[in-house]
Structure formats: C-alpha cells, structure tokens
Image (cartoon, rainbow, N blue to C red; front, side):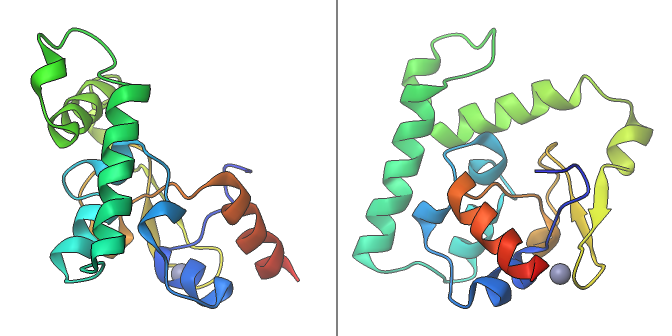
Length: 145
Ligand SMILES: [Zn+2]
C-alpha cells in the first residue's frame, strides 16, 4: 500500500459494496484500542449479533496471543487486549512530537476527508484502521477502476 493510498472507512465500505464484518479487520492495536474503529462501531450499536461478537472476541484473543505489548508492561498476560492495545498506542505515540501527531492524517483519496494515521488517535469515523490485506487490495483495485 502506497503511503498516500487511503480511503476513509465510509468510502471503503461503499467501494466494497457491503457492510464490514469484525473479521475484515486485523487484530491490531489501532483497531482494538480505545477510539479504534472496532470500539467505535460497537459503541454505535453495530455488530451486536452473537456471530459478530464471537468474531470480535476472536480478534481480541488473536491480538493478545500473537502480539502482546510492545515492551515493558508488567504481568500483561493478566490484562485485557484493550488495555494492551492502548498501552501499545501510547508507547508508539512517544516516538513522535505533538506536531507530528497533529499532522498524522491523509486525505481520503475518494472524498477528501481526513483519515488519521497509525497513532490511534480517537477520531470516530475518521480514525485510522487496518483491514485484512487481501480485502484492502480488493477495495483499492476496485476504487482504481
Ligand atoms: Zn472517503
């Protein structure tokens, strides 16, 4: 994915032509942390079915077992995936200045609204997100046609 190749979540959905399911997203801190697209959608009443809740739980568990915290979080095995995700995002943000974080967004290639970067800053529908690679490639190819 080129650095400038980005679509906001609404445009991505419209190009794809269907609603997203939780397992369209990767088990990553940016998706699972506070303000991430998964918690945003859940808070808005999306994904209330038993099946969707299972998929979300699967992502949370995968994130925790595959990745865990980046570093230095004591007894992280006892913590929830969200706590670990938020810790990771906070650690990641320490690498950047306030100004860099403030400018960590790109315009959606389709509708031009700001889409925030990987630092996981809570911007609701404008928050960054990570879709499964294959799905993202499919959306991007469809958009480019
Ligand atoms: Zn857009």
